Image (cartoon, protein in one colour):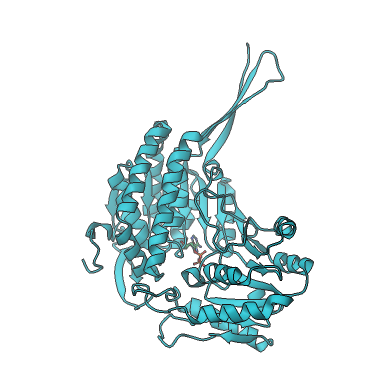
Length: 485
Ligand code: ADP
């Protein structure tokens, strides 16, 4: 038990297909490394097209019995799964920090968040109400009922290795769908541990399947299969666009949760200390590696210098290190490419006249650590204005008036999350309605919860996850016209 789990059974190095734990046909495997130490921690199967086809067939065979169950029966199995996540929170968090690098406290938080989607949809699944439509015909009655879309596929990222799976799988299963999940190759252990618990919860074979391995081969099968009715993807806009095109020939339903370029707007009338607190939460969580992390700080001229000074002071206190150590709030970045991207973006800001208020370089710890950074004098011609940073870097732009803030905020292809700090109620309404974003945090830097609809507009994606709306993404509406009355 090299990872010191209290339940060693949660570390699986096989995939879960049709209720069986399988290896790759040729026994090929994928190495999983700890980003804090660089050490090899496990090897999982490198599956390809053939094994993916088997998983899709398993999901297809499991579908009729699963959708025939009552919503209450499915709910009870999901409740078991939810309870098991909470019971094993500590081990699951440990596995997550080991493969992903986020501080252990954040991993515990993510397991609770992941579990919350299972509990929520276990309940919501019982509320898939349809409509009885007042009929314009004397001899006909009209209804709309909701039915599961069928076999689903999910492709998930490494930044939230558990929650991005349950946010898709829980509504799918609650709705009566079956699913094949392909987790990110960097974080397969969290996904396989979820499968261990799904099996223990009594979720039938074939209902929830996890395949790890070659993204192109597995993704190719999931997107081209006529059996798969829906794909839910969280990841980059670039890959989302590719998968959407691959799904076009079979007209799949799609949920896409893609990149963001979140503005964090601080008006002169804001509470600066609250804004700094919100900025820290929204920017530096998961070392800046979330799709709703603030990417651009837009700060009004009158409050700008005070905000920058206080933000830099708060950033100076952040403890950087191995997520397994007490007190660490900034873990390593996920890989060398991520560190280089951050370096490139900072160099571009400096070249074009911006300044480093704090940080700005690799951390003295070496490896994949980077100093939490604040940049000032940032302008729209710099690369950070357009590109998702995905690292612990806060670029600060200065603006003069409300309209300029709105224009700057909306000047991006993305439309996922936005944040604003103000104490003027009329301004809060004006600005939050004018922001072209799927989600707006007002005087808060944390918006994610299972009860609210999460998702973006523009190039940030399609569909909503969580909330009562999240179930609809896994349901089809069927209209029944009953004549001859
Ligand atoms: P990130 O930039 O967060 O790594 P990606 O979009 O590259 O985001 O990855 C998100 C998920 O998409 C991962 O599970 C990854 O394996 C998968 N993925 C990447 N490229 C492809 C592809 N060509 N086909 C299918 N899945 C892919």
